[in-house]
Every structure is written in C-alpha cells, then in structure tokens.
Image (cartoon, rainbow, N blue to C red):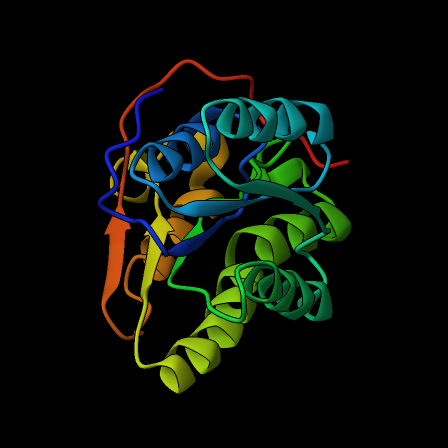
Length: 191
C-alpha cells in the first residue's frame, strides 16, 4: 500500500469497517495518509487485520468496537475516534448496515428494530455527534454509503432500500452519498 499523502493530518472514522466496502474505504483513506478509526460490531478479527495492514504500511489505525443500534454507543465511538485523532475528526463514513434476515411478512418486530436501528438510527446518531465536532473545529465531511437497492430493491430487502434512500438525503454539512453496485462480500447478519 503506497501512501499518497493527500489526507495527511486528517482523521477518518469508517463504520462497518470489518469487511467489504468499509474495509476498502478504510484502506483507501490510509493510502492517502489519513489516520483511520475502524469501527466494527462483530468482525473484530477482520478489523484488526485491516488495522495491522495499515500500520505495517506506515499508517495509523485503531479498531473501535461498538453496537451502533445504541445511540449512546454511536456518540461514544465518534468521541473516541476524535480523541484518538488528537481531538479532531475530519471525516465520517456511515457504512455500517445489516440486511434483513427474512422477508418483511415473516420478520419479527425485534428483527425490524435491528435493521432500522443499525441502518437508519445509527446514521442519524453518528452524523449528529460528528456534526457537532466538525462545527466546532471548522469543518469536515460526512459520507453515507447507500445501496444500489435504494433505487432498485430486491423484494426481500425493501426495508433496507427505504433506509438507504432516506439516508442518502440526510441534511448535513457537505453530505456525500454513494450507492455501490454489486460486489463480492459475505452478507451481514444481526449478532
């Protein structure tokens, strides 16, 4: 991994960085010179391996484990990332998300809450915490990773598609949203 240096002195928090797109985003931030806080909920070993890879290439990385279905945990993980970054957080990437484990008609209320709290409420809570920090430090960037399913949902995942569509319209300073297409990854499952 070669360092480009475009983000030297910056600190980024990537939620859901234990694998897939989140892992790729974390690695790219590190390639550009940013210090990267990798959030994970259950993929701790994968996140640690990614952090180790970043450190081996001369970058800075830390793994922060939290259950983002808890709003207080969202605020804590943002604060921890900023503290680790020397009091600054210049980028937040809301990537964490889960797919429903079954069709809406068969879903329990608890499963529904897990999807909504992971895929929507965590975006609100993390963005709120980051926006406060970024306002006080003079700026920053928030990016929401949406899904191609926001615009073309498959029948069993329509609930996720609605969340992704809503989060792509979140009103924050310098918001960014991207909807990656199909990629090879292990599907996420609620813990």
